[in-house]
Length: 180
Image (tube, rainbow, N blue to C red; front, side):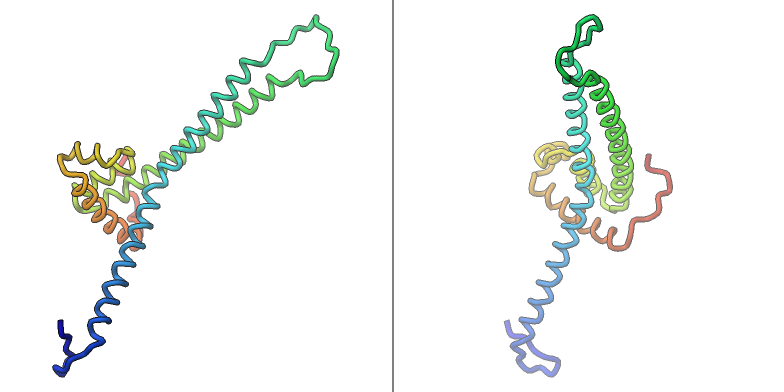
């Protein structure tokens, strides 16, 4: 293809300039999509931390069950931690407090993500984002539920990430209290 400058002469640098502009636009789009994806994926990571904390608490309960009960009439010959059961109970209480704080954080985060997703104009894109980032569904299940191909579902997802990236760039609107 021959590129012409405004005077009508052949311009060999015009094609490179246009290619560079396209490259820069695509790079910016990928960067916005990555930021949007990281933003939306935060709830999944918090939920994983909650599951880990629940497993720790279950392990503490197992340790508590394994701790022998102390009988006052039995003389203690060697030094041992006679308060082991109490220590484990304290650890359980601390872990449960941390778990409750993580759950509160997850609820707030999901509310914020829901508010951001609700700013996406296309209903189909919103639905894909909700299923993917709030319900943690796999692409195949989302596509099946929406009666689309996986590729079309991912295309909707890419468009939705573009829009979320633009929303995050502009700033998230103030919560009106209508979502939750």
